[in-house]
Length: 486
Image (cartoon, rainbow, N blue to C red; front, side, top):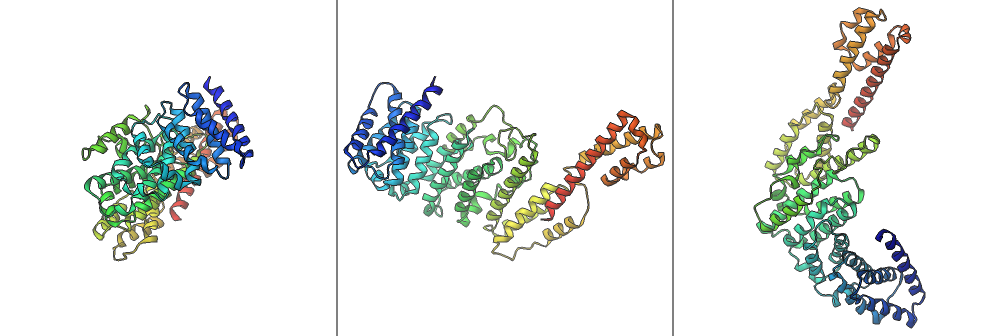
């Protein structure tokens, strides 16, 4: 029933807000707002309070200026609704305060002291199924962006773990709101990042890992942009980067080169590990983090828990490449802060990657390129890595990504040629060197099979299938080769 009533309530609220905007500069405008504020105090059904809040939300967005005498009462009345027992009322109350913070920042901050702390307390009592969490986080992010003295009193080590569970929510707007809130908390705490306790460093390490994992699981541009912005803020402190990320960089490179259509190994992901024992804060958070996991714990690159789109392979391929590029930028931004010993360790690891894999070779090049763009210390010895790249560019091989397909193709082609020879449709001597044939040779030999094969329906079908598969492998091989040369 609510699915039917809710749109009607929304429409009614929008209509009333338009009427209110037409009454601006007249006493009737203040009277209408007063009536709505009175309805917020209704102790009966929650729908009445919800409808009044919806009308106020649209009114505040439409009105260029709220009557002066109504500004403080509006803020106070709407704030009271944040404690409502209905999630819908709480969610709408937070959304209603957003335009007030935008237009009347000083008024909201003056007459609503402790609002940031109240929102954080609300988040702590919510799970990731609460519909109000997204609006609460949006409002929190807005307040943290405002010039509020209260935000400078925040302890990010206590606040961030309350946001972490929502960063992997099943709904995109929740994840976006959570990532943006993390970014605002980090911005508000920027002056404290150079003087961190062990507890705070533990939370920051958790934050780095969470951000990187979301960067390779997400595909939404807004989320990816917010992740990169947050990462860059964290990377402004050399000491934090060195202490919080060095133990994880190998894991992150492994995630960056992970095959797109293979489920990610759960041991590489933060939410599938055992709960850390370092701090009570992270203990509690990780329990919520784990409990928020879906039944299907298989996650894919750039897809999260969504099964790979077999019907749109090109779109999926573009999305995966976008995530790999972002991962390379994040790692490149990280490595410029490492000392010489740490940098040499990274170079050795990149050199040890499997360069027969097109993906690993490509990502190694991406990371090195991003690292080199911002490199300050040029005393690092990169000769070994340069030799590997030169060798990779000059060698010709079938990449590991297509090797299984090519092996199967040769097996099918051999069987096909033996059958053609038995039917006297090809020269038996051409079969002897099949093991040495390239994809080009297979396509050429398929075209040279006697034209009488057209009368053999089954054999002709096999020929066409083999030729199509050979053409697909050839195209994929050329694409992978071009990507590795960029």
